[in-house]
Image 1 (cartoon, one colour):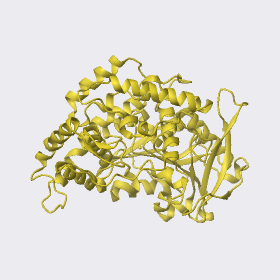
Image 2 (tube, rainbow, N blue to C red):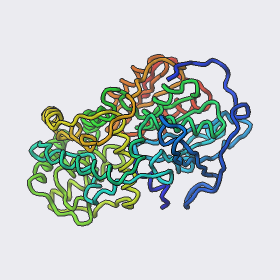
Image 3 (cartoon, rainbow, N blue to C red):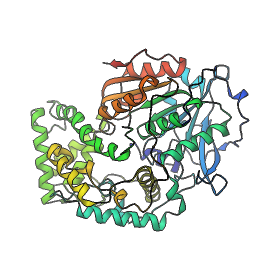
Length: 492
């Protein structure tokens, strides 16, 4: 698998307010394109996909200073006569890439959408093959249960604060100057440099997960540069917390999704059946996690090399991203009950994981100031453990940002209702990573700029993924024709 595809696979979850009414013009009347398109590196990509490099300021406060590279990809519109413009595929994460997406998820788009748009992917700043960063973390610190840390079995955050300082020190020591300049506002400004380089007056976009926040920020900073904007699986835009609110949302996301897993795990004809009734599944998992807290099972080849309670909880959270993953959790539970483990899960190449981790940490920590006091996190963890025992306090815990050495370069962008009404939100009702409760806050912030399609479905990523036909058809119609529901709708 190429580095482009490996990076994309890792995340399978970042102000002039004018609403111009002039008709959309094509690229023929926009700025002259300035990109040199070449064959993309790697194999397994659509032969039509090409790549180019856009140079952007490393620091937008010093636009004449050092530049960095942002690599973009393109598959041209399939019907030049029907071409409307470009559709930018904004990846999730932070730390995700959409560079391979024109060849991948972009080909799931209906023909009338592919006819109308050049499909554009990109590797955000800091992420290879764009100018890249790396914190040089120890292998053990690349475990997801360290990066998105879980409290100790007794709820203490003391060790998490030690880990945060170790990770933050490594990023400051090894990450270089670019680490200071990776944040959502910079990514949005990079997108506008990409727009200019493409020769487009406006862009359409399909942002997913963290990409909904990037798309919202872009639409706030450059409203007159937006055409048709789809935001899929939506982040809470709270400007006082930003990523802290996203992590906290996992509490509700797990609770929203768990009943679907419990129902599936108690179905009589399920070969991975866990219990006779759905009501028995929750206490079964809580009891097993507590047992693994006390007595982990060795797990050679995994990171960490043991199945403990927090690894089980992390697997539960990961599994809930899609119902198709439910068997992974069930098989792990059945093995653990028998005192064994399944084969260790495959890990991405360490170089890729180091890169993705560094970009993710920089974005989360540079977007907003995080508390530095262990007492603040301990209070949140204690409350969370009492109210949401399945997630055991993790969503309120201290991560690397608690010891981050840099301060945000600007205040987070406040998303408002000022700008053109050209945004369509699509949101699954049960989403572990970006729960409906947070999506409703983005809907409220956007006001009349947006319409929201709520989909009766389970899983992260709604459009052309874990949603339903009604939601897919509504989004496709909007992208292809501009027709959008008059008001919020529910796709049963």
